Length: 135
Image (cartoon, rainbow, N blue to C red):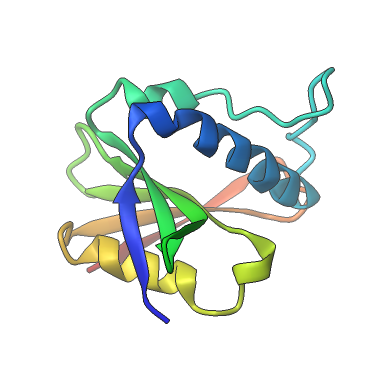
């Protein structure tokens, strides 16, 4: 089972926004910082930046032509120790435990070798822990 990593185009932004609602709902079980808005949905406040800043790149994770998840990638700016960040990664529930997230990250590492950081939320905590990884 091989996946494809495909950059999200501006005209596909609404698809990504729909997926972000599911992602943030999943993530809300690990933090008290996420709340649904008055319309009953979770909003990703900075999604527009991924379509206006050249160092932020959104990708769809595709399997057999279907979008099964996304990966939000950051090329860090003005940081001598960290080159990149996998900002967010999400796989729809029905496609989990197939190794798709791992494949997506590996496909990203090939064209972008360097030092990555990963932000991991601690369950029901206000603090984040940071892990640096070099590839």
